[in-house]
Image (cartoon, rainbow, N blue to C red; front, side, top):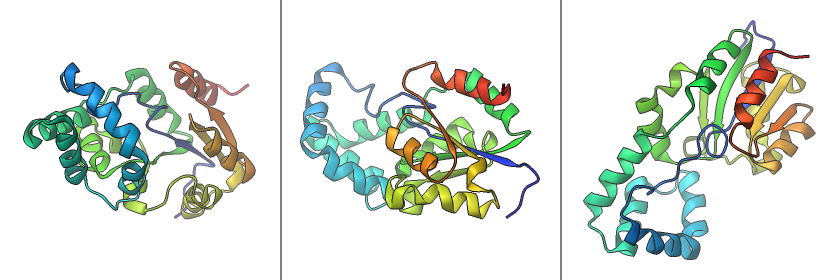
Amino acid sequence: MTDSRKSMVFIDFHGTLCHDLFWRSLPGEHQARIQSFLARDGHAMLTPWMRGELSAESVNHKVAEATGMPFQSVWASFVRECETMHIQATALKAIDRLRQDAVVLLVTDNMDCFSRFTVPALGLDRHFDGISNSSETGILKADGNGAIFRQLAEHWGMHEDACTLLDDSADACANVTAMGGRAIRIERRGDLDLALQHLLSPP
């Protein structure tokens, strides 16, 4: 694929574009059980989920068991949370402007629920030229020292040194820098707006 725009920007979702968590609206008395469950089984569960090897339903069945709540209650809350993830309107407006001169892709290590519920509910496909979700590609951003970024650049006919990443992950930023691109690490709320404004008004 070729595009008349000469640069590409990759933007991460969790920790960069959005800071909301799953199961955030469950009753307070269940939060300690959820945190205990995630601390014990989270890594073994979340990585396969982000690779598309588990479904949101199967994970929420585990959460229901851990909290003692009915599955339907946990599931309804979970879907509602996915559909109401908060993104600053200023960020989306800046991304829309940025797309006039750059191909802007949302690249996220995420789950099936992101594509099923979050993207359509928030209309994210209207704000990005493309969305790469690890649960669909099976590729995490750390795989192959950031191979997904090289693949996306090649797919769009972009030189790797024309790519910029906005991400809270130091490792992802290092991988894009190593391939010849540029990275701006998002370390706190507010950094994304500053980074987008920097890209819109380069020195």
